[in-house]
Length: 585
Ligand code: ZN
Image (cartoon, rainbow, N blue to C red; front, side, top):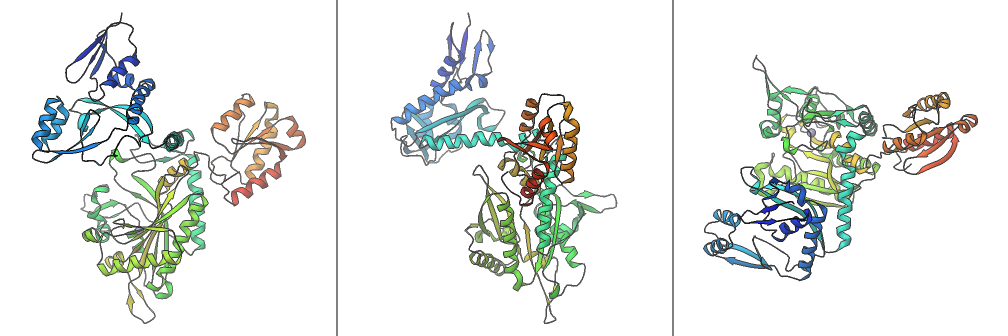
């Protein structure tokens, strides 16, 4: 017979004899929810408490009690007490945790919240009563050290959400499930897009062949659009003299988020480039510029390095080395508006291409914290007015974010909604009057005098790494045809048709289609399921009928059989979808 003992932090324990189930134990613990159990011992063996309590059934029980309680329409009552009274109250309740918290609030007025017979220390605010809580879901249980320190006791933390109705709860749970299913770290590995390995270092992703195809297609797309708009491409190295960043102010201004300088034996100091801007400014400075040369638009897919803390890294979203789709536009004041409009138009085109909804934020400086920003008040006033005028003239749907500007100028930020309704800050367009001063940039105007140009910094994707991470989740790994690493797989029904399948493959490749050939000795049903998992848009099944008719049988991902068509018709169809960057097949 099992002997079971539950120990609580106040030293009390309860013993059970036989026939007690894990669920009953969890119920016991849940009854005393405020005093989490310390340990559960079965025949002298201590159970893994996390695992036992986290059983769905146990959480369900706790949920039911919460629903019962909320239906009673219990008010949350706020009460202020003198510190001494508060301390006495929790001493009587024998609550060591509240007493510990109170130690730090000595002498202050203490705020209590009462609901039913539970009293919490809290500043508030709270709901007036429990009544609006109509839908509850407990999501998980995890061990958590008291106040986040591993020197303290391990307590149990239960995570849950509540909503005013079950429809909103269901939507939330659906989005959570979808986010899990679409997680770019999981899909990135399954679909062989990128690799993060400690052998190379945290936050330094390696692009695998399939990921590189996606990346190159994005780069080509933007390169072509930028060339149409008069950009010139440049390339700059990954390290530079530290003095360059002292001039720009990036060092020591952003010192904490950069890799430390590289010190050479001869005393020279270099830095991994955290920004492309100062490099481009040098190219601008390489020759005298006249008003006839402006605007000068320098673009680069430039890789930069930032030191993210290890706890802050996250798949492709937060990395230590990434490539910006960067460009700097050097223009005269009277060209500024037109140039901003053109960059806004380009950025909008980019997000429309991926079917992403965009909201626009005009990011201003915080006038109460002027020391955080370069440049004087007149520059800021002018630059902020200019971007607002552009936004109004273009009839953009925007809102203003005070304190969101960068240190050298206000920005237009593109807040992009993905398929799950999550908002990401992606493309930015920034106006900069500070760097032209610092780098002494100038051009000769038509009056023969020297003037400072204005710089626009802009990056529609932001970083290729982060953008692709977001795209993986946005499309759930089912990329539109023009980005899909493999667009079609040719599957012979048996070995007999391998020769014909190879002919089809060659024809596809000649037609510029990324195709693979599956000659594994497996049943056709198995192959179809396998390519379905790889999320390949089309499978071309070939057997006797197709060979004699010189056709292919087309299967579309998730949709199934589309019937037979001539090889030429299939190629023409797919080429058209790719050229239009169609989001659907
Ligand atoms: Zn820049």
